[in-house]
Image (cartoon, rainbow, N blue to C red):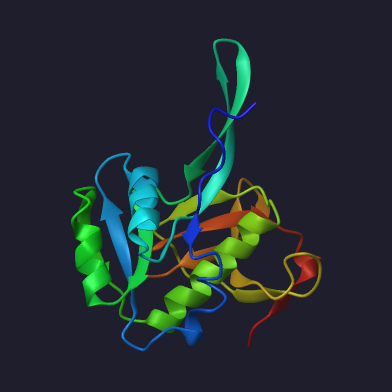
Length: 185
């Protein structure tokens, strides 16, 4: 039983898939929010019609002996805003933003966010990984995650695929069998 219904994780719905069709003056910004303000900021951005992406993942908790399901931000404190200068300034008026980080490589961030969205969509069990280290770059050959690219890492003796948002130096990993992978060299 969910505490609250799942909220919008992106606005508009086709933001990640139709970004190339957007006007050239739009840019991505990594917004660092005030403590525990990610979802509240997302609700206000929808009302203001400011495009954003907030990766949310389901989490189950026990509250007073009952199992409840909620949706929490994948990257604590971060919302990704995509807009022109006017929309950027409008989002700052929410008083929920601590810092707006400019994105140097717009294409790389969009690619990273699309891959994160695909992992969330296939309901893969994700583990957030911070401060990434280099490994072997790979691509998944087949299955529901086919085409995803990342780096192989080992956690507790198990192979995992690390998909990163390089700008934040954070990412998520999913358990993967090595026979599904092919090197990217």
